[in-house]
Image (tube, rainbow, N blue to C red):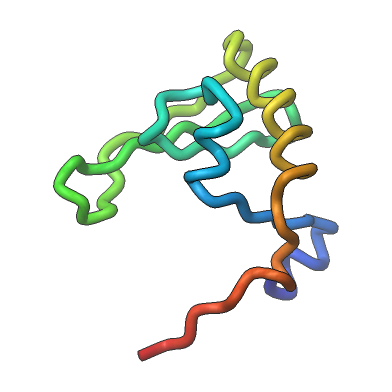
Length: 93
Protein backbone atom coordinates (compact mmCIF):
# COMPACT_ATOMS: atom_id res chain seq x y z
CA UNK A 1 0.00 0.00 0.00
CA UNK A 2 1.12 3.52 -0.52
CA UNK A 3 0.77 6.58 1.70
CA UNK A 4 -2.57 7.57 0.15
CA UNK A 5 -4.13 4.19 0.88
CA UNK A 6 -2.92 4.31 4.45
CA UNK A 7 -4.10 7.91 4.95
CA UNK A 8 -7.54 6.97 3.61
CA UNK A 9 -7.76 4.04 6.04
CA UNK A 10 -8.01 1.53 3.19
CA UNK A 11 -7.32 -2.17 3.55
CA UNK A 12 -6.17 -4.06 0.49
CA UNK A 13 -6.72 -7.80 0.19
CA UNK A 14 -5.81 -10.08 -2.71
CA UNK A 15 -7.56 -13.16 -4.03
CA UNK A 16 -6.41 -15.33 -6.91
CA UNK A 17 -8.79 -15.78 -9.84
CA UNK A 18 -8.78 -19.52 -9.09
CA UNK A 19 -10.17 -18.99 -5.59
CA UNK A 20 -12.54 -16.33 -6.89
CA UNK A 21 -14.11 -18.77 -9.35
CA UNK A 22 -14.50 -21.40 -6.60
CA UNK A 23 -16.78 -18.98 -4.75
CA UNK A 24 -19.58 -19.22 -7.31
CA UNK A 25 -21.20 -16.64 -9.55
CA UNK A 26 -19.46 -13.26 -9.32
CA UNK A 27 -21.47 -10.02 -9.37
CA UNK A 28 -20.27 -9.33 -12.94
CA UNK A 29 -19.05 -11.53 -15.77
CA UNK A 30 -15.88 -13.44 -14.83
CA UNK A 31 -13.54 -11.61 -17.22
CA UNK A 32 -14.53 -8.15 -15.96
CA UNK A 33 -12.96 -6.34 -13.04
CA UNK A 34 -15.04 -4.35 -10.56
CA UNK A 35 -14.57 -1.99 -7.68
CA UNK A 36 -17.18 -1.55 -4.97
CA UNK A 37 -17.21 2.05 -3.76
CA UNK A 38 -18.70 2.92 -0.36
CA UNK A 39 -20.98 -0.13 -0.62
CA UNK A 40 -23.31 1.86 -2.89
CA UNK A 41 -21.67 2.11 -6.32
CA UNK A 42 -19.66 -0.15 -8.59
CA UNK A 43 -17.19 0.59 -11.33
CA UNK A 44 -17.14 -2.26 -13.84
CA UNK A 45 -14.20 -2.52 -16.23
CA UNK A 46 -13.94 -4.74 -19.28
CA UNK A 47 -10.75 -5.55 -21.16
CA UNK A 48 -9.63 -6.43 -24.68
CA UNK A 49 -9.96 -10.12 -25.50
CA UNK A 50 -6.51 -10.17 -27.13
CA UNK A 51 -4.78 -10.60 -23.75
CA UNK A 52 -3.17 -7.15 -23.88
CA UNK A 53 -4.86 -6.05 -20.65
CA UNK A 54 -6.12 -2.92 -22.42
CA UNK A 55 -9.30 -1.59 -20.84
CA UNK A 56 -12.05 -1.24 -23.44
CA UNK A 57 -15.02 -0.18 -21.34
CA UNK A 58 -15.72 1.37 -17.93
CA UNK A 59 -19.19 1.74 -16.42
CA UNK A 60 -20.43 3.32 -13.21
CA UNK A 61 -23.31 1.37 -11.70
CA UNK A 62 -25.68 2.92 -9.16
CA UNK A 63 -28.77 1.15 -7.76
CA UNK A 64 -28.11 -2.07 -9.68
CA UNK A 65 -29.05 -5.45 -8.13
CA UNK A 66 -25.46 -6.61 -8.64
CA UNK A 67 -24.30 -4.12 -6.01
CA UNK A 68 -26.06 -6.10 -3.29
CA UNK A 69 -24.35 -9.26 -4.54
CA UNK A 70 -21.01 -7.42 -4.62
CA UNK A 71 -21.43 -6.46 -0.95
CA UNK A 72 -21.93 -10.12 -0.05
CA UNK A 73 -18.95 -11.08 -2.17
CA UNK A 74 -16.79 -8.49 -0.41
CA UNK A 75 -17.50 -10.13 2.95
CA UNK A 76 -16.62 -13.57 1.59
CA UNK A 77 -13.52 -12.35 -0.24
CA UNK A 78 -12.10 -10.66 2.85
CA UNK A 79 -12.40 -13.90 4.77
CA UNK A 80 -10.63 -15.87 1.97
CA UNK A 81 -8.08 -13.30 0.86
CA UNK A 82 -4.56 -12.73 2.00
CA UNK A 83 -3.56 -9.34 3.27
CA UNK A 84 -1.01 -7.46 1.21
CA UNK A 85 1.90 -8.29 3.52
CA UNK A 86 1.54 -12.03 2.83
CA UNK A 87 1.50 -11.70 -0.99
CA UNK A 88 4.88 -11.90 -2.72
CA UNK A 89 5.69 -8.56 -4.35
CA UNK A 90 6.84 -8.35 -7.95
CA UNK A 91 10.14 -6.67 -8.52
CA UNK A 92 10.97 -4.49 -11.50
CA UNK A 93 12.95 -6.28 -14.19
